[in-house]
Length: 242
Ligand code: DX5
Ligand code: ZN
Image (cartoon, rainbow, N blue to C red):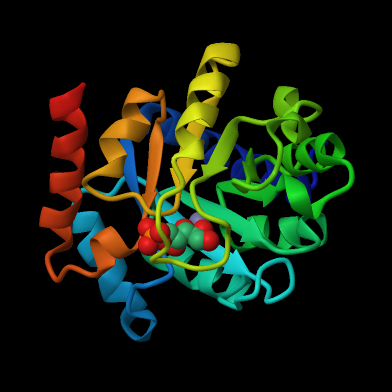
């Protein structure tokens, strides 16, 4: 006999896994990074992004320890969950991702991505997060050797290739990310590939040609007053070159 807790876990897992399917089928998609948006008016910001055709929201969680910057945690995820049915892609730039993973899932995350540099046993962290019934991703900074990913790639849905050192928006794009995308696309055709950092009208097409599926964008959207135009220009540049 299923208990109430079992049933709510199964329902949450079903919803997150269908959200993961929509993330997988969203490719190619521009994911607005909620770091430079107007947090004083988050509900309207999300409505504007939905109206602009956004398919997935990217949430940048920073703990001021793993990265030298501090952003937000579960309350913002919970608040967003109330106002959107879009899949929530939570990018954890924190020192102890497993300690907080369940709290982010309970808050409404559909996909949890942790940094390979933040954990000793990335395969164990990946399987533990997957057991929470959500999608799981692993992120790698440009300065980290790619071999560090080898042990956990069989246990993740997605690799987040950072094209900047995690911690701040508005940084310059590091082209090392393009070689990494090409290598991963060749070795793991089934993996979802995501890129994050310095994505704009110049770099998005290069990343797409290198095999990327999901494109996280901060300043190249939020520095514009017309989000719809900013997002469709980015999509158009990508499709023209395809
Ligand atoms: C940086 C974050 C990114 C950042 C992207 O650590 O993970 O998501 O907000 O911003 P831009 O597009 O401005 O580089
Ligand atoms: Zn991010």
